[in-house]
View (cartoon, rainbow, N blue to C red):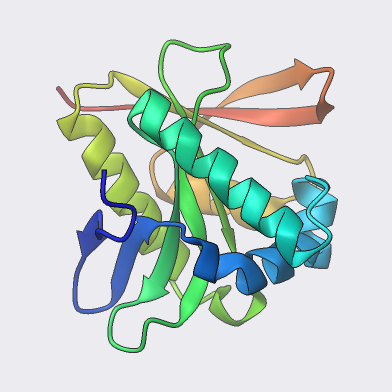
Length: 172
């Protein structure tokens, strides 16, 4: 797979695989106070750590056929955050995940990126998607509900605190 190829592009946003050139903004995203509070540290503390994270993310995408993508403005190529699918190994279908840099929050960009990932998931034949949020992350919970996700209760895992669990049924 060409790691520089766009997965989705319109006049507003582009979703594409992460590259090592993204290391500085990936580091900034992972050091953002909201990332640390709601997602937790992934031990990305240096540009080299960010490169390792990008390499692992791309390897997972190669293995599973889906993964985390960079979200950027199409016209300027300004990075805005990440959006994509994860394999939590607990469900039959992937889990939607997203995080935006501070300047992209509240702009509708994350909603648009999630819609693209959901449409792709449906076209690939997935029956449903899951998503999880920190109990205090009301902004992400509202976004998921706006996208059509329904709260299912809580998800517990040793690797992170209790999460709200959401599910979206996809059209065949």
